[in-house]
Amino acid sequence: MYFCSPFRKIGRQQGTNTTTTMKKEIHPEYREVVFQDTSSGFKFVTRSTMSSGETITMEDGKTYPVIKVEVSSESHPFYTGKNVLLDTAGRVEKFRTRYSKKA
Image 1 (tube, rainbow, N blue to C red):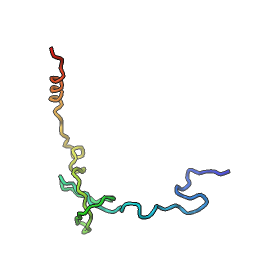
Image 2: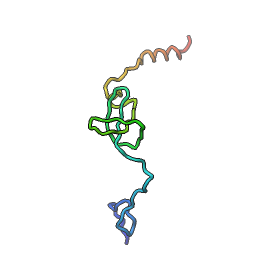
Image 3: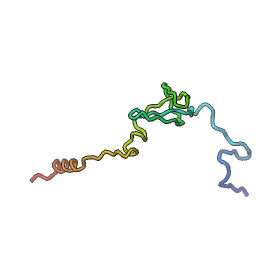
Image 4: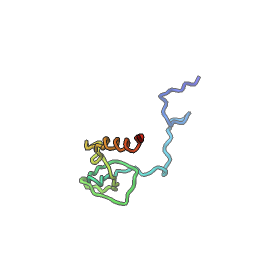
C-alpha cells in the first residue's frame, strides 16, 4: 500500500531523491533598488524586480537604481496622522437642496 505523507517535499519527483529547479532565464532580475518619495524626499533601500535608468548613491557608498514614487509611508495621510476631514455637512445640505421635493 502506498502512503502519501503530507510532509513530502514539494517539487520532488517520485522515485528520485532530487528536487526540481526553477527554469533558467525566464525570471526577472531581483536586486536592491532605492524607492524615493518625490513629495517628501524620503528614500529607502529594498529588493525589487523593477528597473530604472536613473541611479543614486546612498550613504553606504553603493550605487542603486532609483524608482520615484509619489506617495510613501512618510507622506501618506493615513501614516502621518494628517487626515483631511471632508466637509460632510456641506455635502449633505447640497444633496438635500438638489433632491428635495418641490412644495
